[in-house]
Amino acid sequence: MRNILSSLKYYEKKILAFYFWLFFSSLVSGLIPVLYVYIPKLILDELLGAQRPVILWQLVAFLAIGSLAFSLFRNYAAMRFETFSFELIYFLTEKIASKAVTIPYQEGESKTFLDAKERAAHSLDYLWQLKDVLMALGSALVTLISAGIIILLWNWWLLPILLGLNLVSLPLLKRLRELEIDNNERSNPEARAFRYFTEISRDFRYAKDLRLYNGVELMIERSKKSMDRILAVNHEYFTKNGILNGLILTLVEFQSTIVFLILGTALFVGSITVGNFVLIYNAARQFGRVLSVLFEQGRVLLTIDLELASFLKFMRLPDESRSAAPSVEMSVTERIDQAIDLAKCGEVMLEVRDVCFAYPGSE
Image 1 (cartoon, rainbow, N blue to C red):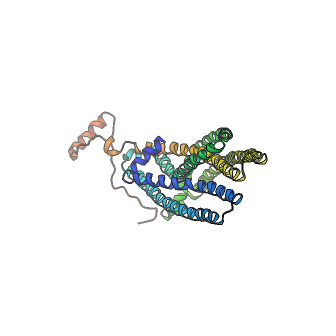
Image 2 (image 1 turned 30 degrees about the vertical axis):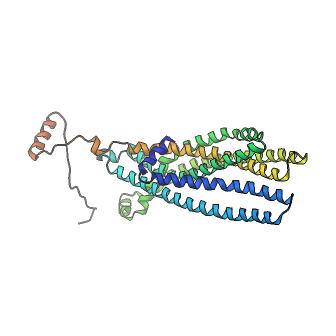
Image 3 (image 1 turned 30 degrees about the horizontal axis):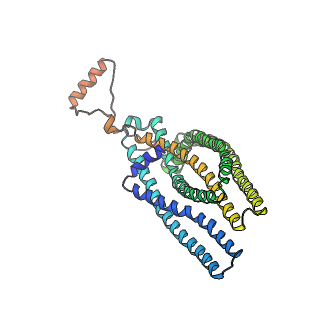
């Protein structure tokens, strides 16, 4: 989280509003599942008990109105948070552009600088995930606390079972994180090279140069090699990613089956009522689901935090105003004398200005 928080500091003017709408959106989104867990239990108890029509209508109306109100609040808060997230991404993109023009000329075209700029720009792509991850984590945390309280009040012994079943997925989540890191390290250089070729091919200004120097076939060949490497990296990544995510989802459904068998047995022997069965099962299902969401989104959050280190590293590069020594304007005579002295020492300083050329056959 350190890199994420450090990156958000660049957005200092609106960071409080960003955090407020994140909190409000997460709170509302997290309470909606609790509404669907508790109200059906009350409706079932009334249907199997006194069956008072007035109470039943009140419960149904409360469920409908509450669901509508929570949905409206959630959508509005999510829209506001998404607006601030877009502003954040565009603001940090502008920061990268502003930083790039302050780099010393002698380093501006070096491979080290270009790779650093490419990684910084690529890391901002993860901010599109960050807004979704933060909302998912916030709402999952609220739902986890609410569902955990319900389980503690009715059947506390289900909590260790749910926690144990979810801990099994931790090694799979760790492997997913390692897979993300490896994929990013291998795909970034190839993506930059391929994007370079595609940008040249789309720009008509380079058409004459490519045809004049017989560079078309070379560009096509190099582009094909880069694309083949990208496809190989992505094929391996998506294959392993699909297998691991499939195993994690299987474990989530397996824990729901285990809880259903335990509560079904308790209902069959008469130790719990139908209403309590619905309440506890839904709460346990929500608890297990959001716990898996917390593990999964936490892994994604760590990956985003790791990627944003590239953005911070680029922003901390020394710019020309700080790295260049203060220069003193010299007269033409002084420059000539300096050049002669350097030539005597075996060093020659050559400066060329206003260079131009013409194509063969042109005037």
